[in-house]
Length: 299
Ligand code: GRG
Picture (tube, rainbow, N blue to C red):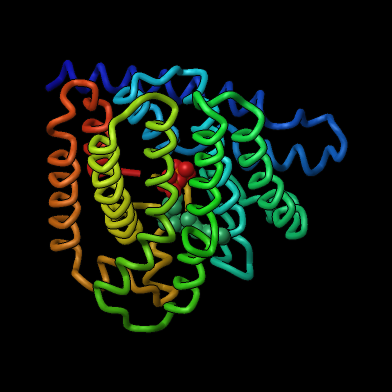
């Protein structure tokens, strides 16, 4: 077990370092005009975050025997969408937060208008990356990748989930409604990360279905654990303001199920994720380890 853990840590560190370098290259240089916007985009994306979505893309890429050059591009596109969502989510008109990834949020460090533009420009850059690099063996397959990311980020995915979230604050939701919100808000982009990583290589239709089942389970597990950590961990550990969900009257897995049952649910989703990978063999070991990391993480 110790060997697997050490091996996983090394793999994760390698992907994270590779992504830092790739994102640094893909983002416009800070001195290019308009310098304030480009500097703020780099501030929002670089030197922070666990890079869970890129890790999932690389993990799925191993199942598909995908080239790392392709994987780093799709992983960067997904991470840019994720970073944009965090910048907009922190704005006063949304979640109104001052701390993210251990530093002042973008609208605090810069200003609200710049933060709005940072999010807009990161989203555009993500789609630009998918359009201007060779990522699949046919133009049709690559177009499908652009569609996958656009759908995951849009009103039927992440942005739609955020709308449901805004409308649910102060309401008492049932478990099915909470799940529906998170399938969109957090789950859609996590699912896209796995789909896009696999699309960089070759997988059969049945393997695609298994990977998608895995991604759905891991996406929900991620959110359940996020809720537990928000109620449990400190601001210093999380690098973002802890305990906000309860203060804002947000329905969460902890508020609906209680911390004990929420923890059990995360464990069940982890087991479901593992089961989905079973027939994929050793190619899927990084995804299996990532399911463990997502559920057992402390930040
Ligand atoms: C504003 C369109 C729009 C969408 C925002 C995903 C989202 C929707 C907001 C993020 C708010 C939030 C804290 C959601 C809980 C789950 C989540 C996405 C946590 C942050 O993701 P991590 O833990 O963050 O992967 P790092 O910093 O590690 O990248």
